Image 1 (cartoon, protein in one colour):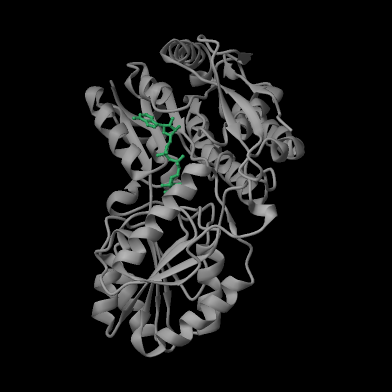
Image 2: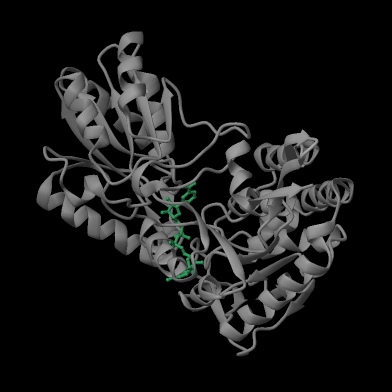
Amino acid sequence: MSIGKVNLLIGGKQCPPASGNYYPIHSPVDGKLFAEVADANEADVDTAVIAAKSAFYKEWKFYDREEKRTLLQRFLEALQASEDELSAAKVLPGPGGIGGLPTAVINYYISKLDHQTGTILEHSDQGTTYVIREPLGVVAVFAPWNGPVLGALLSVIPALVAGNTVILKTPEEEAPQATKAMEAFYKAGFPEGVINVISGSGPEAGKALVAHPDVKMISFTGSTSTGKKIMAAAANDLKRVQLNLGNKTPQIVFPDANLSQAAQAAARSAFPGQACSAISRILVHRSIKNEYIERLHETAKKMAPCLLINKSAIERMEEHVRLGHKEGTLLFGGSQPQGDEYAEGCYFLPTAIEFSDQSSTVCQEEIFGPILSILEFDSDEEALTLANATDYGLIASLWTQDTQRMRYFTQRLEMGTVVVNRGSVLSTRSPWGGFKQSGIGRRYGEQGLEPFFEYKTVWTP
Ligand code: NAD
């Protein structure tokens, strides 16, 4: 059943889009209409920026930490109370998204309100020199569809803590959930215009936001190809950018690894397959390759087909399987599942394709679905070369018991995160972000707050 129309949120009020146009979202489970979402244009972006700019200069920039703390704590309560509503607004079925991690992220950045807002560099008979941290102004945040709430909060909360006002561009597919989550700011009593929400299909609204002269910073989470366009557009007036982009996570498996655990970790990560951290390349030592693949396949057989976000994702999987057939060997999967229950939905089977050449498109491109590429290696040096041989560098997963080898790899992998003998982990204190084309900057931790400040040096007599 459709949840109906989802409007924009500007200046604390829900508003229809200037054009009167809404775009449809269909459920990936059965293809039925799920929601109609406001399709914003440049005029809507203008209205949102005026609201955010006015809220910044009139109020939010000058709020003290206790006022901000009270509002942010009330926001967290309002968000937690909306869990059922948020779950119902999620296109890809699942919980509302206000679990332990989002709560911990909000609390972590609230605790940063207690940190000093400046430092005295010198205080003498000649005068005083001090440095203060100030907010930038209006910040545009782009959240990805695979993390519409957490992905938004990771930028929105530090931006607000630093004293900025925000315009969130919701992801096309999960706009209803992201919009509903932001309504909790107003339930909590935030001043009008401190947080605004713009939705829209295609690039129009996003482009207008990035080009707007009164937007001072862009925090974008999405694909590397869109990130590059945003960075190029932001160069026009030198907007600050924080980019959280795509990846091609390698799992590197040595003969001394616990093969059963490694195969299970890979399957659990790769076959739901729609996370930036998802394992998508297996690099396995030649001597254990067959045994490893057998275990991986056994685990995959017990897993449900992957529910993809939309029909175009199925086409993307099929295209990569076609390429896989040409350049490699299909080991299992490779198609949509059979059965009436899957007939109308966007499902795809857990898939593994073996390659002998890492330069294949399937081994290089982020596919964002349940397709694993598998390559064998003979030596540590070869495994390292293969692991680093893509444009991405967000995270790698290393499986070995040898501590010397762990050191060798952790020092040489060009990745923002390296996990050893375990699945991917996220923590509020640990910076998360990528080397190379996986992004610029970090979220989580101190590093996730820093980009939202400007520094001002003051000399007084
Ligand atoms: P996407 O690149 O398709 O981004 C779509 C968003 O960008 C939409 O809001 C769209 O309206 C807007 N847009 C499109 N073209 C634009 C342009 N030229 N100018 C301005 N805005 C424009 O990303 P997605 O599919 O929503 O997200 C999936 C991607 O996000 C994957 O690549 C995944 O790896 C990545 N991701 C990264 C992290 C991380 O922490 N590094 C976390 C989650 C997801």
